[in-house]
Amino acid sequence: EAQVTQNPRYLITVTGKKLTVTCSQNMNHEYMSWYRQDPGLGLRQIYYSMNVEVTDKGDVPEGYKVSRKEKRNFPLILESPSPNQTSLYFCASSLTGQAGTEAFFGQGTRLTVV
Amino acid sequence: EDKVVQSPLSLVVHEGDTVTLNCSYEVTNFRSLLWYKQEKKAPTFLFMLTSSGIEKKSGRLSSILDKKELFSILNITATQTGDSAIYLCAVIVWGGKLIFGQGTELSVKP
Image 1 (cartoon, chains in turn green, red):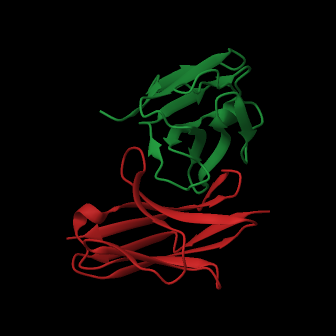
Image 2 (cartoon, rainbow over the protein chains, first blue to last red; image 1 turned 60 degrees about the vertical axis):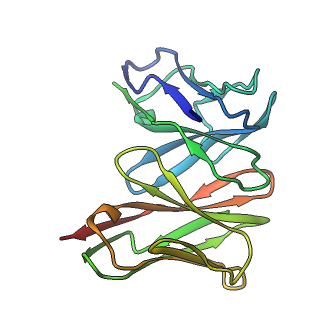
Image 3 (spheres, one colour; image 1 turned 30 degrees about the horizontal axis):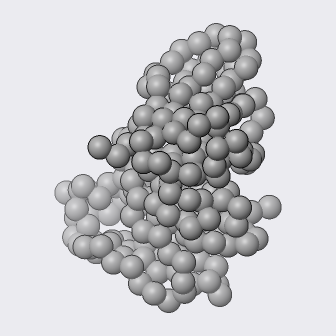
């Protein structure tokens, strides 16, 4: 089954404790991206990757890191989480970013930083 | 600064009504516009629009893009309670960056 898998689905952590949210897709997609969703603000892109070893900042990259060492995985790293990073996070993939093809979303990770 | 604006932000209708959701954009290097439906989980894809004036249809949903006036509309006819969701509009620009609007929360009452 074609899917994007995020882990964990829920996470409560403390300020400053490094964490990683994993994202994996099984569709051989080139394009992967991370979003955060906050009430009243919609989905905002954090980082995106057009292919292996190619990453770019989205609209809200501060406080986040990503890596794309292999095609299927695109982890989101919070080196020192803060309460303002409490949010719902989505990973998505699509065949290519340039073609504007359908994006498949993971099920989301609800992160709470206390 | 690239931006995508949706209106209205929320809407309450009764079953059987027809609704029109709006999405306007101001971006450099427009590539395509996408509509998604989000229930209590991940967004699911509805339409991708690249050319002006060509209507895309899927059952009771349809959408069209106007690249001259920089907007798109999503129509839902004969609404059902299962149409209740947040509808998201997003624009892809050259280079792959994706910009979402705030979403329109639609509630369909029986």
